[in-house]
Length: 186
Image (cartoon, rainbow, N blue to C red; front, side, top):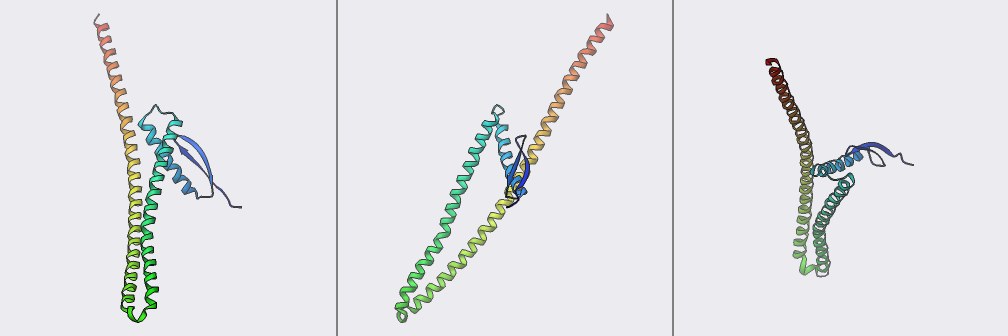
């Protein structure tokens, strides 16, 4: 029996206990992602209920999932093309073995082409991995900057509220001072 990991996460201000075979860090990462998406939707329209925010969040995450799944299938299909070309080269090799004396030069050319395709495939795969890492890094940096921006906006809003309260108190104090002066003059 495997030990389940438990972690308490906060989503839209509500605490939930998650239990999974996945590492705690992973569960927290998933919960943070869902929380960020729900907060984003909740902030766009304060009138939405929690259920409405949850449904819209689920729809947005579903949309992201299907787009990523489509991208994955396209990439997978593109990676299948070199394999198909390799199979064609094998068929040609098999035919050329029957006509070995006539077709030896052609066989050597196909073999070189095959090696070039393998090298190109390795280069493409390495390039893809580098780009994927860069996308992940940039996405992470964007999330950090987005969170900092949200915090700064919150601080700015709090300062605006404090300024408004101070202005109201100043107006009230001026009014009281005016009333005192008028009462004193009488």
